[in-house]
Each structure stands twice: as C-alpha cells, then as structure tokens.
Image 1 (tube, chains in turn red, blue):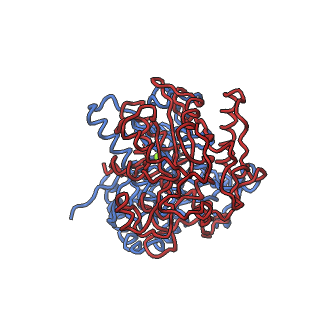
Image 2 (cartoon, chains in turn purple, yellow):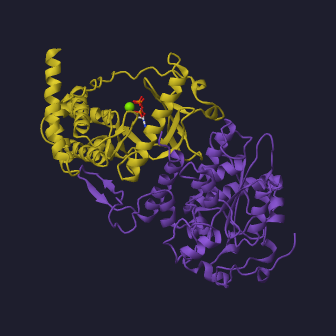
Image 3 (cartoon, protein in one colour):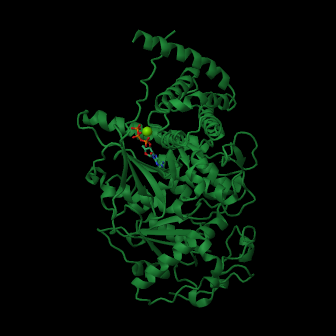
Length: 326
Length: 276
Ligand SMILES: Nc1ncnc2c1ncn2[C@@H]1O[C@H](COP(=O)(O)OP(=O)(O)OP(=O)(O)O)[C@@H](O)[C@H]1O
Ligand SMILES: [Mg+2]
C-alpha cells in the first residue's frame, strides 16, 4: 500500500481547504471518552464486535485506540501508522444463517471515490461491495444538479454534508432485508450488495436508490458492506486486506455517534417523507409522550434522544413498506 | 340509504387461555435458523403472534405470521396474505407518523406472510382491567377509588380519537387490542400491585382489519364495538364507558358528530337483537 500523507490529498473542489473546517459545524462535542463508552450502545457494540474480530484474528491486530481519533483538537490527521487500517467489524444478524457474515466499515475523507465507482460500473467482481455514500456535497441547486444530477434537498444550501444514514440500525435493517430477499431468491437488483443499497430506499425505484444512496465520484464519507455467502465466502481478514490496499481515506468507527455527527435530519425526513416536526410550523404533528402515572393525562415533549429514536423507527417503517400501495 | 352491516360482536374470551400448539416448523424458512425459536404468544384464527428479536439479540419484536390456509385456493390465499400484511403495515406506519400510539413497523415479508413490529412491554387492557376489578371485589370496595379506571377510560377515548382524527378506523376495537405500555414502571414495585395496575400509555395494536376512512358511520361502529366489548368482557366497568366517549369527544374536530352517529348505530343494534 502506498504511504500517504494528508498533504497529498488534493483538496476537494467543493470543500474548505482546511479539513478541520469541514467538520466544525457539527463537531462541537469531543469524541466520547472511554469512561463514557458504556452510555453509547452503538459504540459499545462496536467494541464487542471488534473484540470478537480480534479474537478470531488471534490478536494479530493492535487493539484500536479510539482516543487517537478524537477530533476535539484542531489536528484532524491520523497517526501515520493507522492511516488506512479499516476499522472493520463483523456482524451476525438475528435470523440470518451463520454462513452470512456481514463485514462493515466506515471511512471519511475518501479521495478515490471516482475510481471505486468505476470498479462497480465495470462490474469488477473483486469490488463486490455495497458502497454507500455517507456524505455528499450539496451546493446551490443549480450548481449541484449540473455537477451530479438533481439534488434531493435543493433548499439545503448551507450544509456542506447531506448524510442520509440515521444510525447503525438503519444500515443493519437494509442488510437484513437484502440478505433475506437474496436467500429467498427474490433479488430485484444485480446482487446482494446492490440490493443493500436498494433496501435503503423508501420506494420501488432502483435507479433512484443507487443515485441517492450509492457512491458517487464526489463521495467523501463512505460506508462499505461486504456480505459473506456460502457461494462466495469472504473472511474479515480478506476484506480487511483488500480495503486497506484499495481505499484511500480515513477509517472511522461505525458507531451511532460517528453517524450522528454527519446526519442531515431535514434531508432524511424529506427522503423518507416524514413529517417535519422541526419547529412545529403547521402540518407536522409532533409525537407527544403521554405520562399517566396517576390516571391523569400529562403530556411531555420528547427528549432529543427520544426524537432520534422516533426518527429511526419511522425510517425503518418506510423502508419496510417501500412505498407499497398494494 | 344503505344501512351498513354491524360487525359481529366480539366474543367474550375464554377464561382458560387456548392450548398453544408448539410447532416452530410452521414458521417461514428465515426463522428456522434461529438458535432459540421465536416464542409463541397467541394463536388466532388468522395469525400467530410470536415474541422474537429484530436485527440484534437485545431488540425484542412482535412477529405476526399469517400461515397459508390449505383450504383456500393457493393464488387467492397468497393474494389475501399479501394484502393483509401490507395493509396492516401501511396503517401502522401512517399512525406512527402522525403520532398515534401504535407499535413501530420493523420489517415485513408479504410473500412469506410475516410482519415484525416493535415489542410493547406491558399487557393488554383486558387483562389489566380484569385484574383491577378482581382486586377491588376481593377487598370489598364498592364506592370510590374510581379515578384510576376513569383515567384509563379517558386515555382510551383520546387514543381512539387521535386514530380517527387521522383517517384510520380500527375495525376490531376490543380490550384485547389495546395495550398498556409499562414504560419505566418497574416490575416488583409494590405500587404495581394495586393502585397502579391501570397505569401506562395506551397503545393500539392489531390493525389486521383496519382501513382508511373518515366516514362518521365507520368511526361510530368502531366505538360501538368497543362499547359492546366493555359490556360483555368487563360489565362492571361499563358504567364508566361515558368517560371514553367524553374524552373522545374532545380529541378531534368532528368527534361530536360521530358521537351523535353512535346513537343511531346503537339503535340499529338494539333493533337487530330484538328481531333476534
Ligand atoms: N407489539 C406487540 N407487543 C407485545 N405484545 C403484542 C404485540 N402485538 C400483539 N401482542 C400480543 O399478541 C396478542 C395477539 O396479537 P394481535 O391482536 O395483533 O393478533 P390477532 O388478534 O391474532 O390478529 P388478527 O385479529 O389480525 O387475526 C395481543 O393480544 C397481545 O397480547
Ligand atoms: Mg387481536
């Protein structure tokens, strides 16, 4: 693997040159520190799975030191030794046969998205992954559509990142659906990996789902999923080696807190046609919590955490239904 | 004017729970891989309800499976199953989006005939209400202490009203299709043994017969079915049914017209039973 220094990355056409600036708008909080880990279920899960993976690898790998990725300070670059080691985790979903392991990893500051997309378009089988765009540059409507087709949220011009993934569960739900459809011989797209991308869709339009959720030449944050199947079994170390060699970007842990940093809630609501409960301007009916300890209906507002959970389950519902009108 | 048929009255549930046949082989292939088989909770005429898990072991879910009926024509059967699964899911998704308290939809497979929804930690109103009524009887309470029951009745009325307000009718409103969510109410808390039995958020479940309708007639029939369910299953709670209607009347614009319509529906129901 060629050694890379962060200065070698050509600055993206659409972003502030200083990589730190790209994240300041949503990165007010420091990265979760070890003492607080147990409060973050996604993160904890990732540690467990990482541990499972490390165990399988016979502890060949160094345990991942997450504090190395802290973005509390202004230094946004990674220690050179860890620059491209994918933070791969292997998940086994409920009801899915043990033969279908799911390898997942997340990157940001991707610099070879165009190359990766080419491999998909060319049908290069060694690049059979679900390559999900976890961030896209969204400029003014006209510029954006000239560059890469119509933007889903033309009114969002002040947000450089428009991320469409809510949480880990959002991604796992898509994987579950795709694997289930694959096993029952009901794939609607080319293979289980493209089906994962399609499974994120709130409707039946396959081409639109690829455009919306798939990798583009301008993708900067990238979610990569590889499903091991009985006909083409793939081990975590094989995936790890391949990604380490081919992905030019900065690995970050696949956790709810990482995803939350770049989630674009208004855009997600728009894509999944969910009520805009933003500032309660008309239409959107906010779900209220009914507290009725003593038989009287007290009504409380949802906390931010509850609101996020609510958004998540509504996205899951929209994906399950996939616009079915029956 | 065409007079709509009144749906059959809900039957009083048997005192003994029905014997559940443990036959995991009935489940679709995807659930045959499970190391611990989904747990059968109820076996209805049309559907089996299991407690299972969604994606991760720590996320419980309710799995509703509609097995194919060998006596139905296979094509018709597949079409019916697909229709019911999608229709129930669609109504649940709409309710959830509009803030009506129902389980969230997690996943479905209309071809295999299953629907996975959020597991509601709690119990159906029928059981809670019977428990409360029995406790009262045993401790010889005749008067007073009815605020808890009143409160529950009002919560039911406003939940039903919110559902009607977004254009959904349930089609099978019984106290077995209303649950009380035990959020943060710890089990073993001595409060749960008496006063707090009727606590919890009212959650509407079982939308297998639901449809989209804003017709006052359909809404009134929903209320009538619920009223008769109280009458037959919990006669001692029936006098407080007026609380359901009162809270319902305040729950959405147009609710009072439905309450007027309910009087017609009751009248027809009575005539019917007189004709025998
Ligand atoms: N989401 C849920 N969480 C917890 N328990 C549930 C949930 N859904 C259903 N149950 C339990 O399972 C029972 C049966 O569920 P449900 O009413 O949906 O099925 P059913 O009456 O058999 O369906 P149908 O009337 O459509 O044939 C409920 O009375 C309740 O006890
Ligand atoms: Mg039922």
